[in-house]
Amino acid sequence: DQQVKQNSPSLSVQEGRISILNCDYTNSMFDYFLWYKKYPAEGPTFLISISSIKDKNEDGRFTVFLNKSAKHLSLHIVPSQPGDSAVYFCAANGMEYGNKLVFGAGTILRVKS
Amino acid sequence: KAGVTQTPRYLIKTRGQQVTLSCSPISGHRSVSWYQQTPGQGLQFLFEYFSETQRNKGNFPGRFSGRQFSNSRSEMNVSTLELGDSALYLCASSLISSFGTEAFFGQGTRLTVV
Image (tube, rainbow over all chains, first blue to last red; front, side):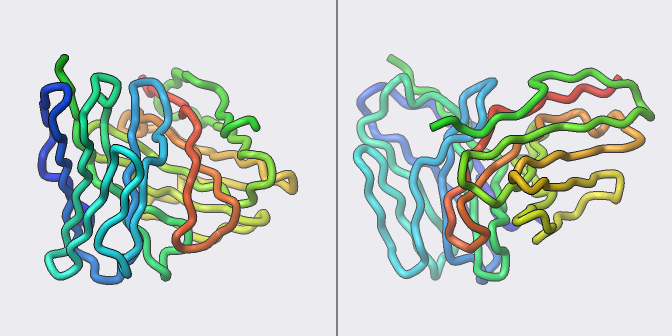
């Protein structure tokens, strides 16, 4: 039972354009969401997070949008750079989960120069 | 400030053997969580330790166990290894054990069971 779903296994974008990565969740108890980036042979690196009391959070080129009614969040990267090519994981957390993060399967982003 | 350190980086074991993986969290962090990553499955939560106590446990068989020492270092043990245990095992450390806390990951231990 996948509570966090990233339905696009991969995404290819031209350098300078916008990358949009999507994530859906089913558990309404989730109220904190995170995005991690992972390069091969490295551990995941925290990118950006959002609490359910917000619908948008911005950090430089990265913006996360949350639509609670649709149980959907997205990560926008503008402008995309070749160094952004990596696997992006969406993760969810809730008060009853403590530190446990529930991850999606990941989306491979390729930014072409 | 040193990051999360996992040892060893790579391991090859035979079916039926047991294995112990080690994780040293960021200095001052008291929570250590373990995750298993397999292709196409994302990261699956194994368990979390805080102040030497298991706080949370995922849906893995009892062959998977862990512990945490007084210096917050943690070990994970897998007994009676199966081929399906081949995966990247990731350790994450957090300052506290609380919802909404950012987790910092190590580079992982790549376990191959043959």
